[in-house]
Length: 452
Image (cartoon, rainbow, N blue to C red):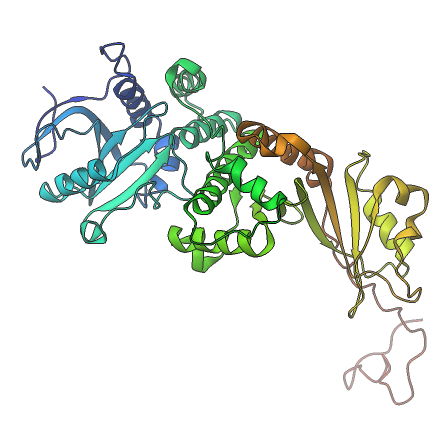
């Protein structure tokens, strides 16, 4: 007999081999994922950590499906799952609502689950779908804030869950043989197209119209719905790109977001719209662990280009422009026609830019009009013009997720930030300065003379 939490009337332990109809893709994916997570502490720690739940050695993580709760709020309101975490001192619970494929969450449905959780004293609702958010505490749907006073709302994308599992396997974080087998099988399951797990594959339907408006020199309006959808799709692509890069490097890659915007999705979208309207660009900053600097991504709608760049301070122990450029070039073994170097100069001098191939022949070619100045910092860029592919909702995504890893392989993995060398030891003096105490002066009174 299943030992159920007090607020549960009936339910089954999440099954690794669920017996469900072929049409129940959502429930099948949810129960398999939940069953595996409860058996792999490293996975529970990574996933539940995003919702503020710590998993220790004595923590027991359980998951249930086909759950019937004591208190009901609406007919047919039955969650796809329930997570119950018991640390021995505290308990935490969350209802799970899953969507798969192109099925999306609705405001009405999520609000019902929040009401259900509140009625039964459950701590949170976690939604799972192919929709993307910047953080787990953001939601793809807007709900009344009054519903969030006693119940938290979180969201995991299937693609993010798959990436977490993939990184755990790559890093060999699971050493138990049986747990490792389960993890590899789950990765295989989530990677199969028939499962319904999807990456972000196309920009908003308004993508082509807005890009064409920019080409026609038409002003974009901040309040226009098509502009809002356009900017929102870039934020979703940013998240998917981070997952793509996480798989590429085998570690978590995250977008760098201003602190004032990180906890407010609405303000973040507004800020993105402001940048889009004012500069006709979409920008993101991506942070790869232990990289020399963050990677800046800039999509220029007017030029139809995608640019990826990293910035470094110039080495201060090199006195000439040529020496400073050569220092950087030595770190970049591979040439590419799209790679550029931009030098930034003291004062109000404008930056100068040259392609890497030209600089290998003449490192001083980037010098500005004042030969007595040297650059204080460098910016390495990869700029690609997408042409007609830029306006394609799918082709744009394909190109962005191709260009960024290429830049990382050519530049990001090779650059190292300059560090000032340690100070050299002061040369020892052979003769004491006048008035300086000698060794004899330091001998204690009555000390015996040294034997000859």
